Length: 263
Image (cartoon, rainbow, N blue to C red; front, side, top):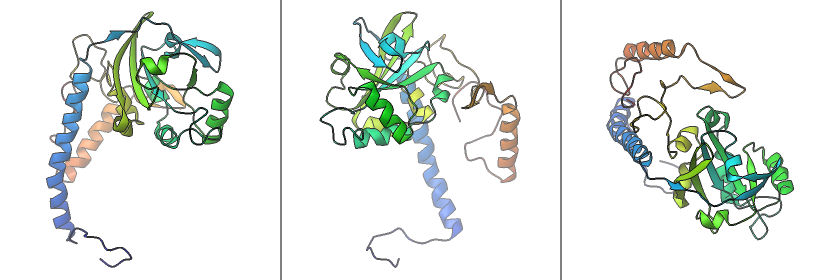
């Protein structure tokens, strides 16, 4: 390989050889996908801990409790972003790493469609938070911590993501990730996979009685969150026919979606 950098690159092969190598690695890709599914299933069986202490935040509408952060939904995910005096970039920017995380966040309407709220929390005043959100184009709810929430949930010195669930007015902490665990956050799927209820789809291995619907059924356009796709089964079958025409299935036997493990 000619270039300015000396690199020990892989061999250059024919398209057929590349496809064979890709199919071989795809086996491991599928194993990894199913391992992630199994890990998420274990998360859904993690014990819960009751949050009995009262916490107070400042938000766009004034004072808010931890329960208020749920915004009437069943699940809550809170990312602790470092934006406050003493953090590099203040007051023009939040922490570079936390800002990169914020840039990755998918439109929150898709989490909301799964009865889940995502919120960011920092110690900066609301006026600064709103200014930076507008500058950076961020739309997620972002609150100001006013007490020991960060210390109590392991995010006073380092970023992290806490997951909560509520039963009426009772709040429970269900999961926590930090450090490199936050690298995977941002997509709707990765956030749902750390929650107590998961993606809430029929193929998932979840405890008895957990809410579940057919996959795809809850997908939305974010600008029309009350409108789903009534044609999703037909879309699946069209995909199946296209796959069969190509002579192979990249994800195993193609059949109409049903309950059971995601193929």
